Image (cartoon, rainbow, N blue to C red; front, top):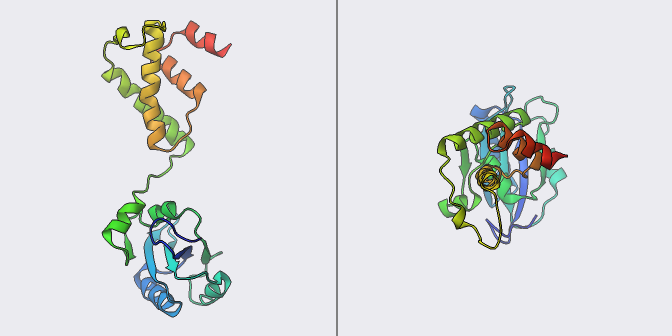
Length: 208
């Protein structure tokens, strides 16, 4: 895909190869020199299962034949199920964040270009996310202050209890935004009830 964010006018590709970390970078540099890679981020990683590999984003001055470049790696990688992957990069900033997430990477981009990519925020698993929501909601109880109803539009009527729920939900939405999660109404209602911001009848009234 043609890059319009980091290296304008160049074509960005996702590249992953399974290699030993201690010797793999030298082989990757050989590969990049042969195929005239203009810019690169090469991140060294070890998976949770112990597989060593490099996750990269490569920029070329023109479109390339990815099949040809993948074939160069035959016999040069670790003997894994799919040792090489190379495709056009669709979400360049996201790929850049992922490639640099371990802070163990080599690049010829400058500091300004790296800063444009931003920081990687790992996505929480479902169970971890629910735990994070619950812990975040519990902290709000400790921070809660008296609500001033006069701060709201006098043309609209809100009960104090409804205002409290809205404050709580606004607080929770900050966490959803931070993790790029879509808010889930039922989850927010459950958390408001669990942590004492809605009573039983209020929860029942919005559910039935």
